[in-house]
Length: 185
Image (cartoon, rainbow, N blue to C red; front, side, top):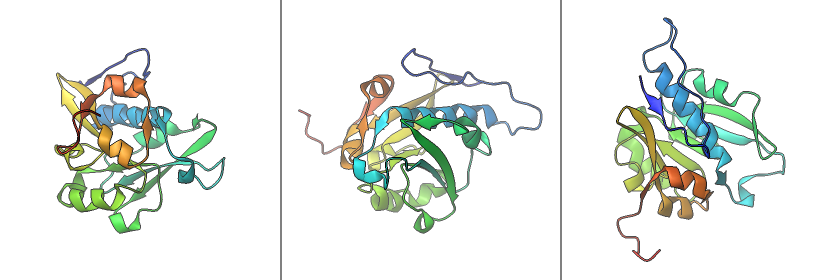
């Protein structure tokens, strides 16, 4: 079973027991869905990212959705800074409408560089599980270490996307920088 880091500053759902009907990865993606929700709590988007003061925060999944109903359940009835949360799913990168958090499914791995270039300055908080995601400009990458779900953050990519990530979030992450980033930042 995969455990989750539970520091006081970043409250996540505990790992729930899986029922016999759920696929084997359900507990992992239940935890990752909780992480995605929490990422929205600790991210500040530029004011231009929202049309109106009450516009929802849009979480988008691109590619084969590994979450099933877990992402919908994680955000159901919740708000972030007075904004509702909406989940949308897309099969093709060209179909993705403006969003605030974009999860790139593993099925998109071969096209990751092109997709990342398309969204790198558009402002969504990009999240994936693919090995080199943060090294090619993605903002957050999930990985498993010692049977725990962890994440790394490319702070240079966040700056390019005009996102402000809370120090509480960064404190829990492994920090990654662009290879050509100045060392004094």
